[in-house]
Length: 268
Figure 1 (spheres, rainbow, N blue to C red):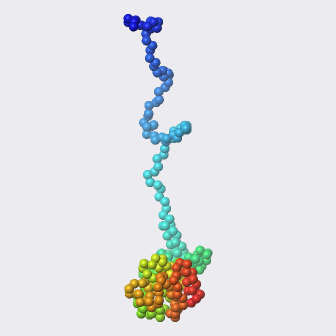
Figure 2: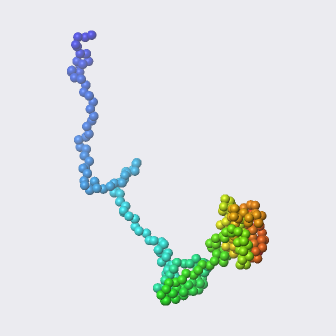
Figure 3: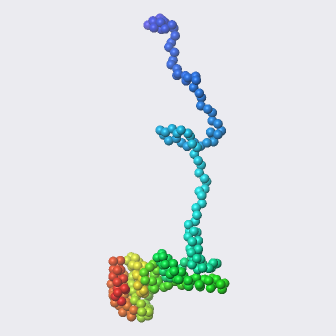
């Protein structure tokens, strides 16, 4: 071990240790970025997508708080219908009602679609005359009663509700007083799923063919009717002619409805 002497290399470097490395200073002539002005601070610049440099920073436009109002299409349709009825009637100031769901109104709409305006005005003339007369007398126009559903032959008429039978005497009297109309007698049960699915279809079928629909639900009070007609399965449908005679009997489902339609159309 040496006695406090520095190494030979240190003496050759004039007695100074090497200075630590420092970061290079930026060049003196580089301009500083300008300070933000109030005008630039208020602008809202759109974000720049990656890998693209826009030429000019365009401020984002602020959307309006509420969109522009659009015209009401329902109001335009109502105004158009009122103007058309006024032109057809040839009179102003009538008290007009919405179109009626009657057979004449449906025919009138079909004639207008086919292009026969004269037939449309002729079918609408009685209703307009009645409205004009009521307006002159100081009253309000009367609504034309809807045609019965049994009078529809096709179309989308609402079927009348079925008549539920609870006794043999009631059933016999209804079959005798059929009014020269065929009758569909349906034996069903409340817990029968096929009966619930088939009943609205039978209602529409009876309304389309002008037949009556009678329904007997099985319970303690109507069990004797099932025994009288020897019904052991549901839904059992018995078809009666206009004179009250049974002409067909079967257990029907969705597949047998075309056969029942043919019986009502051609077999009675």
